[in-house]
Image (cartoon, rainbow, N blue to C red; front, side, top):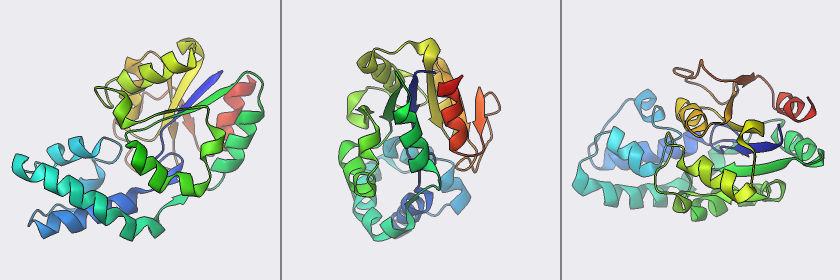
Length: 209
């Protein structure tokens, strides 16, 4: 593999509690209550799609989106980089002719707020954010944007993530999918992954085959 495209949440960063606890707080403020495990089923898709899947009334979607965004910083201390991620990214960057990119459902300002302070930006040559495509995962659009920008050969490209939405997007775009076992708390629908990584270091082996 020559091109490695990464999801962020649940893949590079453990951010589930940060986002879901903030969402739970906001929804309860509007008398909308879901069990925590139902909230986590929306982890990995856009915020807008998450609220639609949770059957939030249309007239509350915009205000809840704004309140959710405002609530997240209070829970930011719950987010952290998974063990071994930075060492893996360093090794990938050291490989000859390897490209490393980000494709995420995050908006650019969310990335700068949640990821940039953790110092991971320097490992990636391209970033695809929510603003860069029309349809989010599980549609292939964001991965196709990344492939075009990177001028990548899709037969030598792997998208690495933690959810069924990541798998569906990767396969719809015609690239391989690598599942990270450390972030995939709900592995329903991801049995068709081309690779399953138990530890971050195993990803580097794909560039060395």
